[in-house]
Image (cartoon, rainbow, N blue to C red; front, top):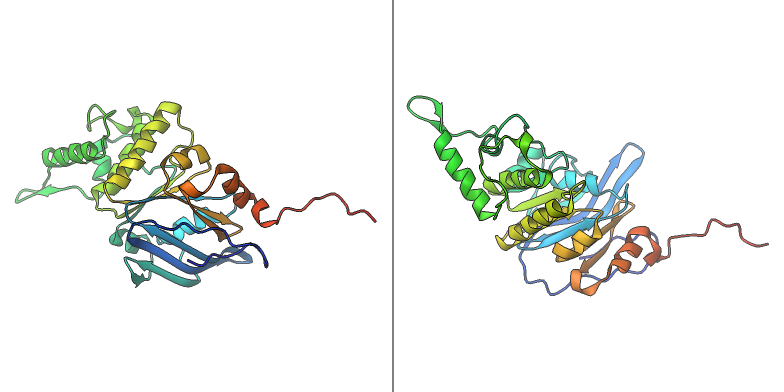
Length: 276
């Protein structure tokens, strides 16, 4: 996959190779501008089924814009999006969701005053017939099953109110909601931000479980320790373009940091005045 470069003459980053996965999502030459600001420039990206891909970059690198483009929120100005090998065109988030693309943002979008079952089914409640009534028992059974499939063992009951849950448990509920509705690609925006050690471990185990279940997972994170623990590939975004795509076993934290900061490409300049 051709990669954009931060400036003319910058060396090409090593690509990840040998991954035995089927391509699920591919972005080709994605561009997005907001007024005078060019947020994304010729972004190329590939996400494979059954792998965890980490998207990293400094603040302002364009990660959020890119994720929202995949989620159908930011419609690209140009470029091509392929899903399962076929070109797709998003007109809004519902189009992405219909394909099986789900995004878990940092705020998780959970209702604190409702229990786990109600959050999993929010807006999609099962209704009995002929007398209209919510099928509480069947919904709870399915909720228990999806939590069991994801090996979420810290929730004693799906009838617990979300307000009573820890940060890690809330992440688990948000991810379970994505999986419950047949998500093929799950994007997690800073999933371990502000979590303690035990809660972070719980979320990382959940990410691995998603991979084992065959889902494609994109993790947006500043925490390279977490990234190196669960990711198969690392894609680096810098100044709105993709500058590196590494297989996790072929790189190091130092090399990733160099790509993030631009040191790898010789883009850092001394601010000291030149000698006469």
